[in-house]
Image (cartoon, rainbow, N blue to C red; front, top):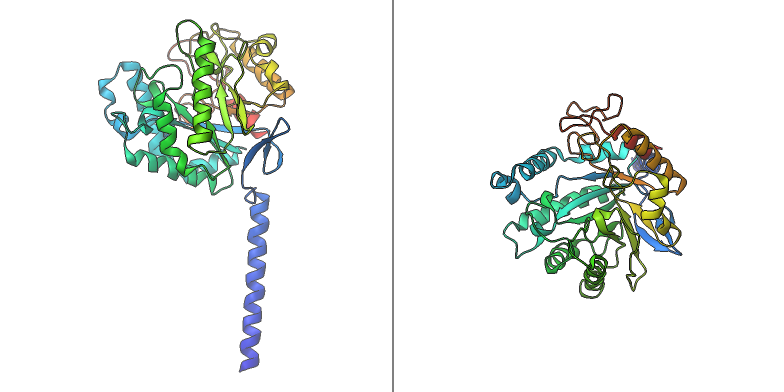
Length: 363
């Protein structure tokens, strides 16, 4: 009897060990062994200790709290439509959508989060919104995928007229969410999405407000995460940028190289406006798309979009496509990737760079 029990236990342990090895090998094959931790060393962006080219997608599911989504009828029509799209994105966010992004090659998922939604002094602040963000980040991080949290202040955030530069509200918003992410180096903090203040001395205001925010994040919040800072004109321009200092040396610069009549659409202009910085600092393209319904669309749009992606490859830069969960951007209403096969430039256009983005991320 005792000999048989010993044999049975031994066989069980052999089965257990084989199972563990199989699970481990499957996990390695799918990148599950990765922690997704990010740092900057010797001027290079590293992920789990190796050079990293960030590729992935933006999710807008949590860019505004429920309090804004439910009360959107009181806003201007354009803002109502934006929040309607956010509401749809929120409803379909799931583990499956994370898995779909990963299957397409995403090593990073970027969540836009609401500055007023996280500011306890704001009328749309809700405590449950904090939990929703934390739960979403946890769902991504447990798969070893890196997360970017981008602090949003525009209409998408659920409250207009938040100002074009970091403010006391920005500090309070980061103070709300920072305790949940400070110890996770797989979360990058995009400190203020698309600055675009008006008036004179824009770079002076940009420098002062961003330096104050960076110092607050490091000293008052104790965060050691990699930080991402945008230039002016909605993150499209770094030309003439004054110096910022991060005492930890963990600061990168984010670019949103949207093209069209009001932006820049040739390699020469890419280089002049922001590309020059890639030889001096870490630069991440944290958001991009090209849509036929946007202002500035012309028959040159497909060529300019292809030129940008070629330029990114030559610079060994990645791309985070906008937006994985907003209909009519990467995917059209039918679920097919947007493309330029039948380009049209009007408010009802279905043309877009979705197919180009998906191909770029999957390479």
